[in-house]
Every structure is written in structure tokens, then in C-alpha cells.
Image (cartoon, rainbow, N blue to C red; front, side, top):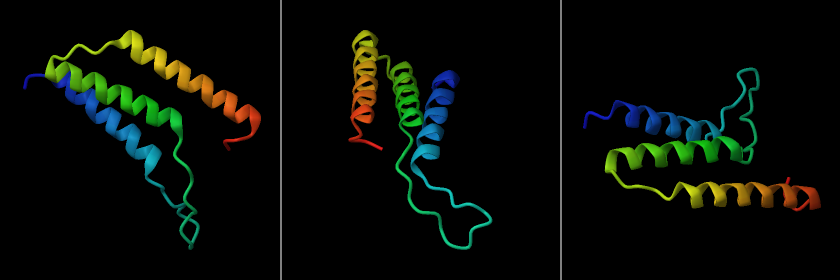
Length: 88
């Protein structure tokens, strides 16, 4: 599709998502490591990179003003819930 930059962004975003969601057991432990919850910052970065790459390929203009505002609101809510101890 002659969109090398979009392919790089989509691949990088999928790499961030994979590294955050797939558990990797430690090499020195004989027992598989317990499942840890996903790290949300790499998930968020991965989703944004995939969206940017897909918008470049498809030509769809995304409303970035609203997307960034929603992301900042979700980050703020995450801080609030961690402050009250509801989320660990």
C-alpha cells in the first residue's frame, strides 16, 4: 500500500500490546510465573499507535482532540481509584 510508516506504527503498537498482555515466565523459575495484570501504559500506547497506523492506511481522520481528552480522563480516573485503594 506504499505506507511503510503506517506498517511500522501498527507493528510497534501490536508489539506494545503483546508485551503488556502476554506473560513471560522467568528463566530461572521451574514453575510458571503467576499471571500478572496487564500494564496499562503499554496497552494505551499500543492502542494509540495501532489507531494512528490504521488511520493513515484507511485515510480516516480521527478526532484526536476527543481521543486525547478521553485518554487523559481515563488516566485521571485510574489515579483516583488507586488513591482510594480500589485498584492495585
